Image (cartoon, rainbow, N blue to C red; front, side, top):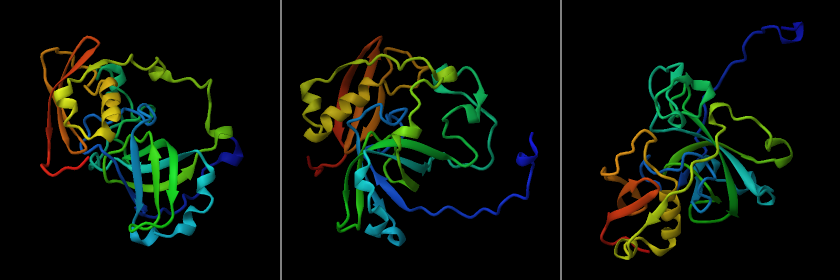
Length: 244
C-alpha cells in the first residue's frame, strides 16, 4: 500500500434519514423481480417524508432518464451478520461472500436499484412525487437517497459478472385463463404476466405439483410451474371493493 493510502483516523458517521417511501404493487417479498429493470412495466411512486417535501430538491431531475435509488431491505434487518450467504443464482447450494452478492442479508441491509424516470410531479396532495418504472422494491420500502444515473460513467457494457455472469433465465410461457385474468385490474394485467414469466419460485424448487401463491396489488395469485410452462390456477380479490 502506498503512503498516500495509509490508514488515517476514521471519519465520524451519522444516522441515515429516510427521505421517502415507494408505493408499488408488490405487497409481499415473494414475486418481486430479482433485479431492477427485469420487468420494465412495473411502476412505482416515490412519496417524500414531510421534512423532505420540497420541490426545489427535484429541480433539474426531469432532464434525466434513469435514477439510482438507495434503500433499505426493511424486512431483512437483523442483529448481527454472516460473512457468507447462499445466492439463489447458485441454487442455494453454494456459499459466497456477502459482498460478492446482492443478498438482502447484509451488515446494513442496503439496496441499490436503477429505475427509469417516468415523471416528476412537483405539486400533489402528498407534496412532490416521482413516478418510476422497473422498480424491484416492496411496497412502502424506505428510501435513503436518490441520484441521477449517468450513462457516461455508470454504464460498463463489458464488465465481468463473476458467478452471476450467465445470461438471465429464459422466460416462462404464462397460461392465464380468462376467468382468472378478469379478476385482475386491467392496468395491472400486463405487469403481472411479465412478473410471472420471470418465474417467481425459489430456484431450488422444481416440483411441478406444488402450488405457489403470492399477493400482487389487491389480488392473491396461485400458480404451478411445469418445465417452461406456468399456469395460473386461482385468483382472488383481497378486498371486495378493490377498484380497477
